Image: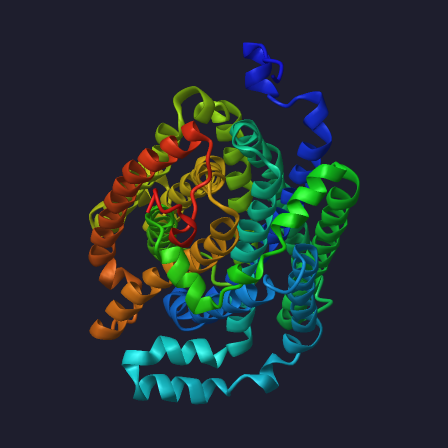
Length: 514
């Protein structure tokens, strides 16, 4: 029986002294992954949006990100049957770091010769206006490829590999205390990453101001410096992961975790078999709805927000500086929310904690869409009374909406979702999580792309603002579906945790249960 904390200790630091080494090591692992994710998210938007606009993002996520995610899950399912978990972990991170290095050293400096001529792109766009944004996307194909790898970093390294490892070495009772605390300390990485990006932006601006380099030199310095920070973060991830496996986990824990990574021959499934296996679980289906709904709602509102950003900050360095400030405040607000709500799961239960994120999205999205629709009517008041342009007001409100949504995700959505995986059997926990998280997050983003991209193509619209009313209806519709799924999932999750027995796939049910 574990000793009980006092009420104050339970609120401030609900970690036992004998758990400290494992807890802090996992927090450091999350820190490095989030640090890289912060830098890469900034860089991918800085490359794409000032170059070709936010309108290409739906097509990037549908035409490239989703197929690449499915391909990754197929490869992951195959390799997880033959490779040890640690080997697979190191192999994946080395692949990412190698590509980012190649992009900074060779691809970006030679982009002019590698990309099609701008006049050819403009001619093709004029000839085929319904697919003008797809043409623009392939016109900067190397930026698009970099964008995809940055997207996959978040879903693969953080959502899949980190949380899968955490679920393997954490019990359900520990997760109630550990998971929000992981986020509380780990999300200082957003602040650190924002400072790193801000420092690089300032140094790049000084190059331009002193006349020592062209605008091209400024962008080269920005990208090479940020990729260097990413390489250092990647080394930190590998060193920390090695430390946990060899010096933190006790011998019996390491043996248990490693044994979970060695599948029996009858459990070696192909991608098709894995999808069939996972789709037979209504439990995982509910988790998938949560993941897809979050990705779709946040990405649809984010598209409109980024459209305003491009107008306000047309230069890449200025855009990058703004995004650094944005992620700084995401980190600060996430830390504050986690600090005050970190005991909410234990105090009020999984259901109430899981409900907070969709409620925040509904309320904040309502304010953002109202501002977008009433932009012309309030333009006079914003200019003369507030002293800012309607575009800047939309940037501010949209930024607040995105900060609230992302902070809610990191502080409440991720911990509650990951807790839902813990009662599952090992096959569902490994391959089910890979299918739901990697494909699910990409499908949520891709669904936002299919819907917005389809509307852009059907209407031949050149601007996202023209389809904003349709996007608002979709956002609120999926928010309601999300809430319904939480009700359904809560019933099964509570039963499983109370029984303390893992759910198994239909193939492994006893005759009596079947």
